[in-house]
Image (tube, rainbow, N blue to C red):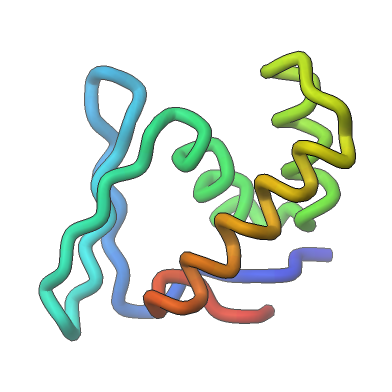
Length: 88
């Protein structure tokens, strides 16, 4: 079960270099995501839990699961603060 879902007024545009841009429509603010940020965003969009997203990051980047979970939690908190994702 997912912990978060994308905010209703956010548009994601993946870019050719493996990054992405998020546009928060109410504020017309643009946010850039690197590859790791995009992987987290895509996990949220797919309805994965934070633990599932962290496990995928750990495997893809040769990280410990606890370290990956910290990365996901910190990034999710930043996205919530900006109104880009909301608790599910």
